[in-house]
Image 1 (cartoon, rainbow, N blue to C red):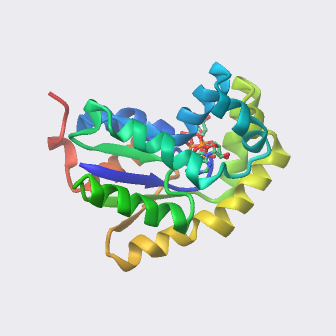
Image 2: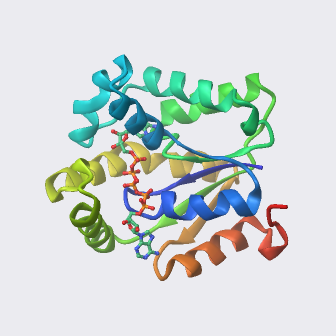
Length: 194
Ligand code: AP5
């Protein structure tokens, strides 16, 4: 199963994907995690993207696509994946289409987690205090939300027009959101990793 999981920063994509990947027996591929790993390792890519990420802006499409193509080419992604954080704009949505067509692995669905802005700000303030992620300070969160509204939100229409979009309420407990996502996937509890 190939799923795009998207939604505003702090909507719970990473939290939900961490469990969904086991239930669906596919890897969780997060472009944010891949980029943060590159920054942490101090690779040339990491050095290039560090300041962009800290400012809450999008890394260039080409750099992210290269990273994603390398990850999707790995063996564990053959059976599918949950893609978190990609696509982030219409150019990336088209690039993903082209890549999946090239490798003969069509996308099954796009899941959009919907969470009101006030709740996002509250969640990310909590994470900034607990984990110190640099892009969680209130000013950068505002920048990330602006980028989302301007560049990523239109991706919903891209998938809606293709009848591949499911909108899921991302409020409530982690378990409640997970149950809604499983319902949207149409798998209920019957899809569980062996
Ligand atoms: P990325 O890592 O993708 O960040 P993001 O989209 O801003 O998402 P977050 O990781 O902040 O939030 P999330 O939705 O995963 O929520 P989470 O589960 O963590 O990207 C970071 C940066 O990398 C970008 O700004 C950009 O610079 C770059 N980048 C990445 N992909 C790119 C791309 N394709 N193109 C260009 N640039 C790219 O939850 C958030 C918090 O809420 C946590 O503390 C969690 O514990 C809590 N929480 C979650 N669910 C609940 C719940 N139900 N109830 C209460 N608390 C909850």
